[in-house]
Image (cartoon, rainbow, N blue to C red; front, side, top):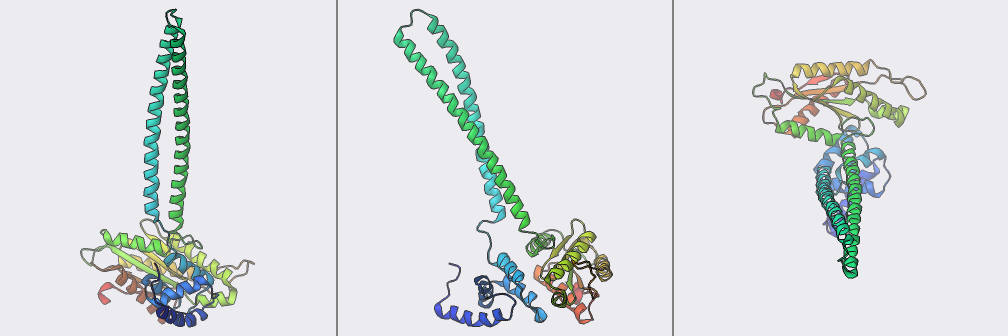
Length: 351
């Protein structure tokens, strides 16, 4: 059971959740309540961190934010995509084996049927074979042909099932890919970012010495994004998010990763990248955004310039993902405090 809370405890959670819910721009529906119930209960650290990031500095949750939080942190699939892939491949192997066995059995049945047919013709041509023996021989031939037809039907069904499994496997693969992509911007989402970061930390990302290239992280946040939404509407706000995402995507290549990790917060994960190079990339991104003109749907330019604040840091040997991300976050908010539209570098040794 997901919620083993007593009546008194759940009532206390309700009392705590309602004031928080009413401060948001989300209707008071069950999905919103589920998000805030989990938040006040403290049982979902990932959700708590995501909510705190989205509501920092007076931010509020929109309907899309609430839905995204629910999908990412509460409505997890019953079967992990990786497990689903293994199940699909296992079924395919079973069907392959069954189809191979059925085909082999069908071939043997066909050869036996041919041999029986030739033998029967010889016997039927002999006058010594009585009527009863002829009848039994004909019955055996008929049953053999029926068996061959049954084997052929089985083979056809197995082929059809194999095709269905292949289609299901493709659907699972597509669903897995979509589950790691931010629908609005096309970048990797927070889940994909965290998986890639974890993968980097289990590999050789940490340097043996501070001079060696290491894993670097750039966090960027659109300045005054709430004002953009309030002034021009959420449709234009979405255009701004997509424009920033496109700029990031153009500047990064494998094995780097560009991701949207929050409402207006983005990340660049840069393996095998010196800190100086990561800073230069962040400056290039900042300059590209500040110098761009984002047009509204009616063709008009934005009335104010869109800018980006960024924080850059480098992984320290043996450092956890949480400490690494938090230091980049501190660097980002140092840029915010310094007037925005700038890049702050926070080295590991200064943390």
